[in-house]
Length: 142
Image (cartoon, rainbow, N blue to C red; front, side, top):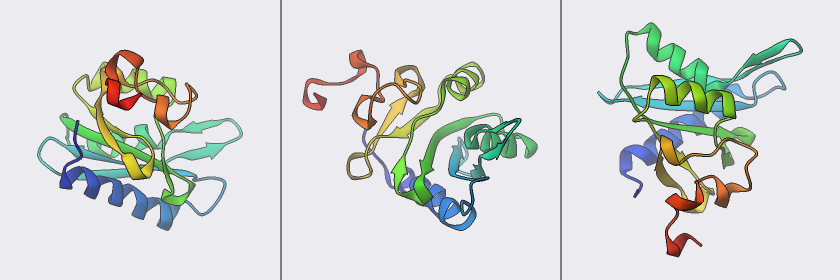
């Protein structure tokens, strides 16, 4: 799917949070999620020796505290906003179960694209070019 202005603004929102809040080993990833009515919620991950919380679930939880049930698009950035990353397997499963129509913004910064959640592979499955299931890529994608 083609990136819209609202998608680019969502990447900018996540990047702004990453630059402002991801300044230690405790917080390294930021997420921004847009609701179906256009509101944006953000979150950062929380690292801890006993485990932690991923930024995606923190952002979704922030939206839930405001009564939001319909999420439209989500993006997660790392390295203080210098790269867009896919969700981990746990987050992907939670998001699929609770928000099956969610769309992800994925890919290298110079070639971002919007992908339906059903076509997203979890983090660690190849490089940025391989974040989308092979059947979902077009011939032009390679």
